[in-house]
Image 1 (cartoon, rainbow, N blue to C red):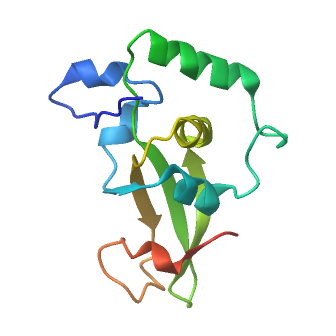
Image 2 (spheres, rainbow, N blue to C red):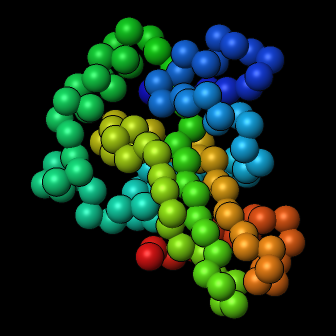
Length: 137
């Protein structure tokens, strides 16, 4: 599996599996983490026995690898919990790519991280924080 970081300038990266149009428009932070860490953050129970798991999606990703396609970064969006300065999972994209990367021994995957703040209640600046303060809802 080969991951690329999509940019406005290089439209060839827009063909990456998992890319979506506003991926490069959002202010976000790019981090590299193990596929296992990503899965633990977004859905610790995700796997073949999970109701969210799709063999069809895995087959599509395997075919994409065989065809030489590149893969877009995974993503996590968190939202700030009022008055606590803590973040909870709001949405994610990439569980199947992470699962396949883990199964195939890919050491690290790129992940776009975005934290949404309520400026009225935020005690932090910049909208980004360490993943250590990130939890599940």
